Image (cartoon, rainbow, N blue to C red):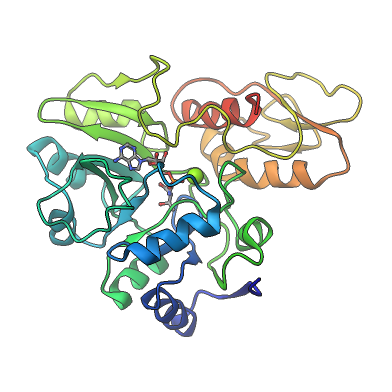
Length: 313
Ligand code: TXA
Ligand code: MG
């Protein structure tokens, strides 16, 4: 049992975090999407320590984070379409699944033995500083116990991973609030593996392609399990009012005990989603109900998370 400390994500904090990471220990850090549990992607022991802290099945591979295109190309092969997407959306909340480059300096445990690798160039200055200070590509899954609600604030991380990690860098609430969009990129097309704030419409505009959304029911991102992001309490979707004992999460005209966005703004709703789920889960109510969210633009990503939060476990 380790004592988990929360410290400010300033220069001293980043220095301390880098030291721990170079010793093979995972540290929770803010990114623009959600908090990540960052570790040295080049070290098998460090990657194993991330899986252990999260209680994550080791068949579920991790995302590698880099600061620049040259670093990215030591890790993955970039067909022209991937370059185009990198130009359009990096740094930012887009993850690409690409073929691993020959001799890629990442532990085989990180990709769970797959020939592909998930890679992203984050925008958040703290995550970027940590990659620069350690000089390593950093593996970072969301900083929460496997299968539970993602963390958008340092105290969410501390609640979920208390005693499992030594350090949380506090950089305040994250801006986007939901995990990055994941696309699998081939020579002539791309498939959406996880919806996020880089929307299907944005991807289509940037590439001139039509995007297949893989709703065949097949799990393509191994982490896209049906039950995920799960609060401890049962969750009911599309609720217009609360039943007895329910904490109602509102949106737009549905007011509820807390609202994702009173003005029905999807960007604001995404930013508040996990925080409001944490609040509902921590309340005295026995169950959680959630107002309907329109299934367009960023709403697709929000509904993806909500469906999994409500799924039978
Ligand atoms: O915004 C984000 O992406 C955050 C921040 C910390 O960067 N990270 C994050 O990581 O959400 P995680 O581990 O919670 O989700 C990564 C997803 C999983 O569903 C995993 O199965 C999928 O990426 N994935 C990783 N490598 C893959 C691969 N080679 N092929 C298909 N899916 C992959
Ligand atoms: Mg996650």
